[in-house]
Image (cartoon, rainbow, N blue to C red; front, top):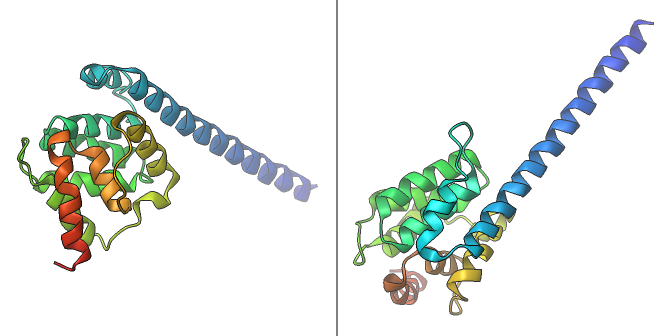
Length: 185
């Protein structure tokens, strides 16, 4: 008799855990889909406001905060971007690019003459050169950015990330900095 009671309790716990995991996965999938849809459908000058409407005070939304960080970087506001990327990584630890960008932005100067490209490369080295596109979450958001920013030139994954997140004035420096990286400098 006791065995059946214990088995029923274990079965209940397993089913409850699986149900919660499915709900969490569905919630995260919906967050990524909604953030990406909003980014793609909103004019560039209105994105920050539209995305901010999806940031409840209770639980941070990783993909929304990541895209808010990208909007700040497109506008050369590195300090605001650092905060947004930090919140994004805290909300979804699978956003490895958010961690990299948060630390790089903290060290970078503001404005169109920012050293953010160099800081991203330096931070990437300091973080033991993570393979950014290996995680699905990073790939989804980079694909979202690419849909509105345009296809980057033929670049390695780190270069693609940088090209997609920095403002237009800094994009020409990406290839030059990456060639220095390839030459070991």
